[in-house]
Image 1 (cartoon, rainbow, N blue to C red):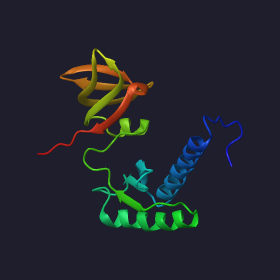
Image 2 (spheres, rainbow, N blue to C red):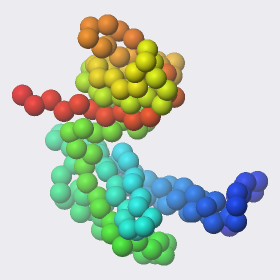
Image 3 (cartoon, rainbow, N blue to C red):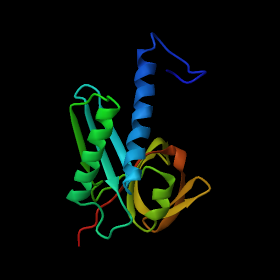
Image 4 (cartoon, helix red, strand yellow):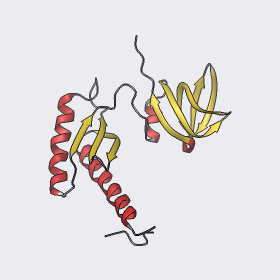
Length: 167
């Protein structure tokens, strides 16, 4: 059931939960990608047994619409039923205007956009930064903050989101 060489802590129940969660993410991502979309983020609530996923696409101008969410939801419901995954509620939506940046490719795709970063470890005494994303190079994010260009290690980024523009 567990991969060879798996390390367990305590009585193994937490390890089992992590193993199932990792496989669930792979299953969901495979299904979403197979339908022509990108899995931006997956949130799981073990107590409420809610699966909340955010999907996106570059193939369509205007991004994700209700029909896309319904398509993914219907297909995932079937896949989860076949795989005997127990959940109470499945929510599928677009990532929104304040889309999270979760993969290295996101930092390239949204170069030129304003972003909000929350860091794991402070830089110059701060953990939160807003600035214009300049891209990603050699594991470092380029960021322009108040006209000054700086770099931040991608590994130090805890959360990154686009900052919506309202004109």
